[in-house]
Amino acid sequence: MSVIVFLLAIGQPSVPATAKAPPLKITAAELHKPGYYPDRIILNLTETPERSLAVTWRTSTLVTTPQVQFAMARENSTFAKSTKTAFAKSTPLKSDLGEALYHSARMEGLNPGMVYAYRVGDGTHWSEWFQARTATEVKDKGNRAPVRILYLGDAQNDIWAHWSRVIRQAILSGTSPDLILHAGDLINKAQNDAEWGDWHRAAGWINASVPSVATPGNHEYPLGLPVGGKSITNLAQHWRPQFNLPENGPKGLEETCYFLDYQGVRLISLNSNERLAEQAKWLEGVLANNPCKWTIVTFHHPVWSGAKTRDSQAVRQAWRKILETNRVDLVLTGHDHTYARGVSPEASGMEAGPYTDHGTVYVIAVSGPKMYEPSKLPWMRTSLKDTQTYQLVEVGEHSIRFRAITPDGQYVDSFDIERRDDGTNRVVEKGQGGQPAPKPATDSGKGSKIGQLGVERGDKQNVGSPSESLAGQVPTSLMAALAMISLGGILAGVSYWKK
Ligand SMILES: [Fe+2]
Image 1 (cartoon, protein in one colour):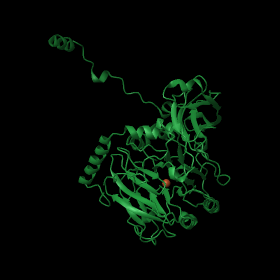
Image 2 (cartoon, rainbow, N blue to C red; image 1 turned 45 degrees about the vertical axis):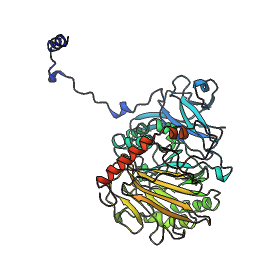
Image 3 (tube, protein in one colour; image 1 turned 180 degrees about the horizontal axis):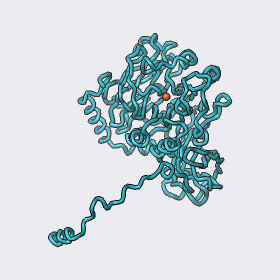
Image 4 (cartoon, rainbow, N blue to C red; image 1 turned 90 degrees about the vertical axis):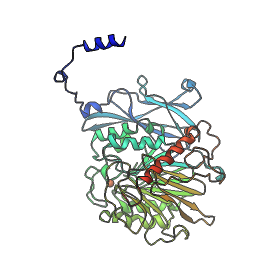
């Protein structure tokens, strides 16, 4: 039989290579052309994350009835028979590739700590059903759910080719984030629609399933002028139409300077590109009236730089004192295309000493492939060269666990910020240089949930939440695999200051 097949095969006329048609070149306009079906779907957190979710998507200009359908998720598809509808507000956007409509809607009246299914469309052309979870309410302190934040530095370059694996691996590794935090420079050229399209398609359904917050970097400002510059240009025209972020900051800085409280964590975004002094006053007010136990601030330009040549002095002068005297726990930034973490140089005794007025922990990270040469500077406790990372920041009742992880699974920086009974913090080093993170423990100290990366969730009302169900599915073999990969990293000599 095989002989017959062989004879038949050699009997076929061969096609000379020269006769093949050249590969079709798809243009950027064709690749990113909007249609009737929604794309660039992204969830954003609102200022009331327990009760609402914001969603934005894109279509062609022909769509006239944009809407979101939503319902509490069930174990089967029957939720789709009893949905609510919210109609969207549309904003036209004319980019270098053509015209499109961006639609923004809010799912309101949701219950805290529950999983909702939703889809977006025009009544005829629909997305698939996604599901996402609302924040739990902070009722009693002992049962507050830990908040899991996936923090990403600049994506910016070769987004489709080289950033996609980072954000995808961040999810595949079992982080189960409640939200994704982008610290600016999501793209390289602010007015380039293809780059924004690549950013959205690299994240794909992740953006539609985990709410994001984002702060703009200099590359979201078309000319990328220096921080503090007086002639700074306007924010990228894509920003406000494609995101649906809080508008509770200073007038004119909506969706770039804002705050929200998520399960006992005050999250603040500052826009480090313009009007720094005005934001300083606003920040003082937001920090002075802060009921949350933990405070995390994000902006793009770091207070302390990753290299001697990249000092963002204007930011430091405008905001550092306010951040530190108000005991902001973490400041998450980007911009310097390196990884670095530390405290202000004069702060001392991080491990054993008291939380001083200089105890705020500063982090610089980069998730995209572009890298700059770091300097070894006094403020740094850790610095990594040529390393793309994602960060899992888990904010529990008594501590923040911070893990910087590479897309190939190495834990390259790990530390905890522990809150003492007297209200002060201390930073506890948990390992650097490719060492695997220690076996996670719960905030109550009762030990870890098998296979779960990080703090066990404290909320009991969210049966079926993405976090819990995923956590339950992450096998111990994954942890073993991560440990093996991490060991490989050590053997390969990938470590602090060795790259
Ligand atoms: Fe930047």
